[in-house]
Length: 197
Image (cartoon, rainbow, N blue to C red):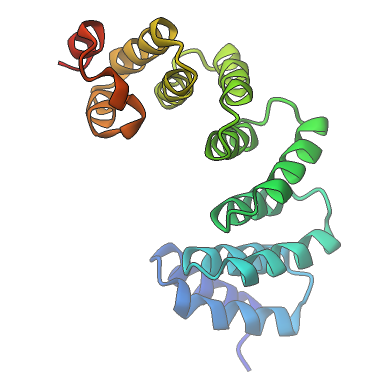
């Protein structure tokens, strides 16, 4: 019988090669031997999620959270899977529970702003952007997200200022802005055209 260390090594090797479907049965073997192995639980959940089997991924994360309710990686991966399943209320509840204890956790704040954006709560999403930008002022992705939210809110001058700052960080945001339907109402705005030129 193969040792648990050998199984973990084999599964993690497949996992790192992004061969998620091949890694899952090996993680299951590990969990038959040691049902409390949180590394195997989390990686199996992540592999399931990458295979778009979000329901079983969430079940896996929930199993791990029964063992360790405060495991940050399990919580964040569960929020991500809930978001991908469009289970926004439950995802937001999990974000808020985590943020009560860890108010500046960037990854959870990022998930929360994206969820709020998807459910068209743009004001609240801008608030989360500002919270992240207070800690990481040169985060181009968040500046771009803020610009998107502000565009939907019709706050055009603030939107363009945030978009301009994101593009100053990286030209990738210029390309994103050109291809984003969020800015469709600005195709005749001279300042917008100048920023994305």
